[in-house]
Amino acid sequence: MAELLPVNINEATVVARASAVTGVSATLPTPPAVGDLASWSQENYQLSVKAAAHLGFPITTLSGAIRQDLLIFGTSRWTDVDSGDGHVYRFGISLRVLVQVQSLEAELDLSLPTIAASVQLGRAQASAQLVVRGYNSSSLGKLLPPWQSFTVDSYSQYMSAISAIQQQIMDDDGSIVPQLLATTVAAPTLPSSSQSIGTVLALRGIADGSRLKSLLSSDDADPPEVQDSITQTYSDLGLGPDDEPSAQAQENARRDLGPLAQAHRWWTSG
Image (cartoon, rainbow, N blue to C red):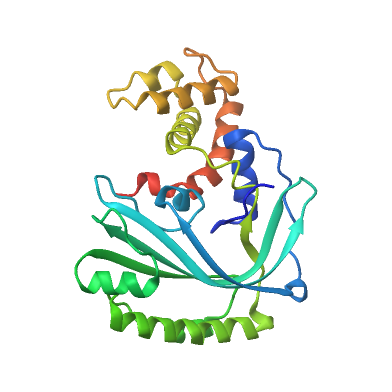
C-alpha cells in the first residue's frame, strides 16, 4: 500500500496534480460530515523541505551546504474516505506545527526541546509555523501564540498556546469543516524537483502560446533534467518542437497549471 502523506492542499488540487504530473487515475473524493470524524491521533512527520513544499506546506528552500529539515507534529480528528480509485483520503480537522530547521551540523536531534536548545546555543536556526485546517471561526485569533524566536523559553510558551488552541478547535463541532489532511495518492505522484519544475515551465509556455523550440533555446538555459521534462510535457500534449499551441491547448495548459502552480509556489519564491 502506498504511504499516507500529510498534505496542505485541497482534494481537487491533489487529484488534478496526480493526473497532470504522472497520469495517475484519481477520483475526486466527497468530504465527510463532521459526525463521521471518529478517529483521533497525534501526528509526527519528518520530511525533506522539497517534499514538504510539493505537498503544499508553506516553507522556503535554501541552497548550499546548510542542512534543512522539516518536523511536523500535531493533533488531528479524522476519518478515511475511499473514492473508489484505490487510494485513501483522510479528511478532518488538524492542528499542525511546522518547525523548519537549518543547521551546518551533519546530524541534529530533531526533537523539539533539542532544536530549541540548539537555536539558543547558536548551533542552528529554526522557524515555527502553526497550521490549522478544517476550523472556521474567528475565535481562534486571540489564542494564536505571539511572534518570537524559537528558543527554550519560547518553546514552553508555544506549547501552552498550542494546547489552548487544540482544546478550542477539537470541542467546537459547529465550526469544523473537514479538510483533506493526508492521502496515499500523493506518494506515487511525488516527482523529483526537476521533473516538477519542467512540467510547470512547459505548461506555462503552452499557456502563453510558446513553441517548444523557443522555450528550450532561451538565454536562461535550464538543467538537462528540466529540459527533458519540458520536452516530455509538450510531447504528451501532441506538440512538436515547431508546433504553435492551439487555443484549446493553451486553455488545457492553463487549467492544469492552476493546481500545479498552487502546489509548487515555492519555485518562484525568493
